[in-house]
Length: 448
Image 1: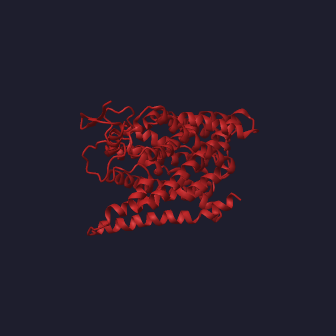
Image 2 (image 1 turned 120 degrees about the vertical axis):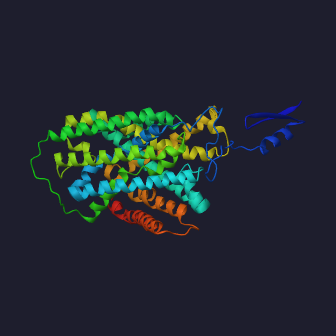
Image 3 (image 1 turned 135 degrees about the vertical axis):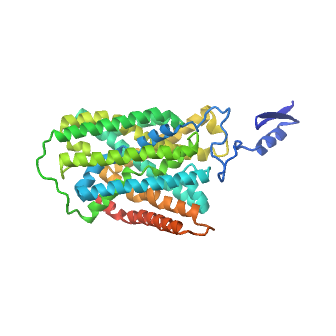
């Protein structure tokens, strides 16, 4: 029996005979497993490679599709806590914090995009950690981003339980409700391409806009007449949680590498980022101001709990898509980071085979189960937001982008006065992230 090795390179198919199966499998093991790469100015190879002729193509996102997915991932749970930030910090200090963090996170998002363009192989924070600090950096940042995603997923499971309780008026058996939310989320996480989530992301954004609008109408119906305090005496712990919640509202940066990796052209990332940041800053500021002025200093977190029962039910009903889809987007990125690591150097991730699909579903189910356990362990919405922000959001949003910029621009180059200023600015970003992390004990006190 004659065995043949078939190989395709640069569009040319070649084959040669082998005398026996041993020679055949040796030839198969020696052949390269990575896809051929187009010429780029980037260091390293694109993780998805040349997808021409492959079954499953990942690099299919236009800039606006990527922008909508980024909006769905970021503008959801965080907005529900921002009116409470104004109640804690005061009207004008709170507005300054919301806008200031928005401007700063726009800059750090641009830095992440530049790092991706320079190092095309970067699909996650773990990959960036590998470039910066080798295997140790890869493992530490990989574990941190995975825990961060699981905490976010847990927040969405918890909010799903709250939503069902409000709509049905039944507060018992929350465990089964949260299980149902987890199962529904698994179903929506099954598609392996981000493009499959772009339409759902648009629905999610419309959902959060509708929920916020109904909340505003509900707040206006309360007819609050007491004067609004612009300076409140919060405790140090309250201030920390308020700032952490603002950081959480902008903390989509952990997934930016994954989003930029599936763009048709990675050079379009500034347009996708601009769509996200303009939407964020505008919606966050307007929502926080209007709801705070309408409801007052007693506004709850999440803010949907501050309106009457009727408006609360309407708001939560409209918010169902964003409650589910925003968690699904984060879960998708978490699952894909593991999936790509499992199939690194193989074309299996581009296959529709039973094995490739079943392993994706298995990872989905595992991560959502872990998120459900966390949601049942920390059943307080504000505590999960504060814990998540203090533990990880500040790393990915401020500190690491500062380190990325320094890595890209400082080594082996003469420094101009502009570069010196930028070095100082990015060092401040690193410090900001470290300071927020150092405040984690305040969130620990809140959960005890």
